[in-house]
Image 1 (cartoon, rainbow, N blue to C red):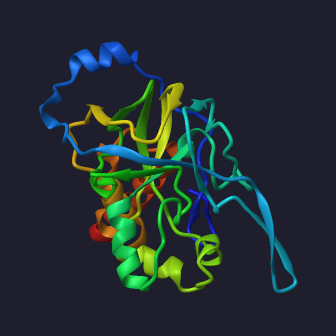
Image 2: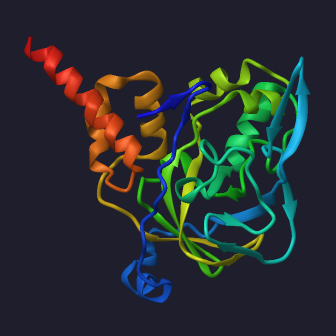
Length: 251
């Protein structure tokens, strides 16, 4: 697995297909859906250049809410961009979702207001425990279906966004990573729309657990292998790390 500076993980160049939305909704019981789960804002951002000392950094981490239906397709949503798609964006990082309940927690920690899009998320959600979403879990939003794919790992641009070089490490310790999503069914999504869980795998590998294992506890890497919807590079890392641990135990 290629791990880049600032805790970046390279995303592979493919994503999983899916059943049609209507069929999937028929298969899934609504008993598990919480009535308050919805999209508070849809956020997009363009690439900008900022000066950091003698360096020019390009980034699109500054996101702002937009109104009306936003088209979803390919590897992105309309009006959104990423500066470097080797580490942001692409099929396995098409959307980034973060809960406003977690944003409120950060407001208390940082002692200042933040609001939607503060962590570079495309979907600011309310009533959704994004950190506990299982890898491979599918969400219906508007006319789209999205799949939870991997956690967000903090990088130095998060620090630039908040003028705090220590924030990436604080973000890692907080264990509130949010989740990147794949596009399974293209369509459109709008602020205020209800989020429905239309499929949930039977393992217990959550976005939070993946981040915890990678950043803090490699000894549990084998448990990640149950989440076959993880990107190939995540699975390769988990397999190699667990294999090394197994060899050490047998010496």
